[in-house]
Length: 140
Image (cartoon, rainbow, N blue to C red; front, side, top):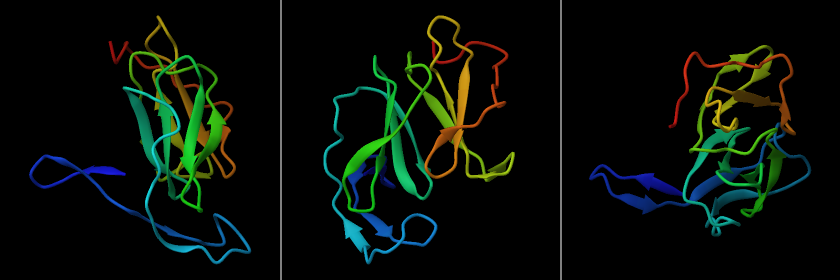
């Protein structure tokens, strides 16, 4: 995973993947893992530590979001209702509408520029009733 160092340069880091009963059962996976290359080419995306693991939703025609699995490989996590356009933005909340760490994703609405989706749970699902419309267009 790339992280920004104190000098402003981006460096590659290993990710510590610790198995827990909340993320996976009947496994002994625990340790550091070198993360393989992202499965598709992308020039812009949004990502977060969602459900305790790195997740990325890339810009493009596909609405597929990916998550880093406990075995250190990338896997399909969920599919956005609309693909990200003009870059994506996102934020993780601590607790919202009964979901622990829901992920608010912005940028999947084409010409409108003000639509969003909220995802939560494990496995992830879009949280119904959480259609947040932004007051103005962003990422333009």
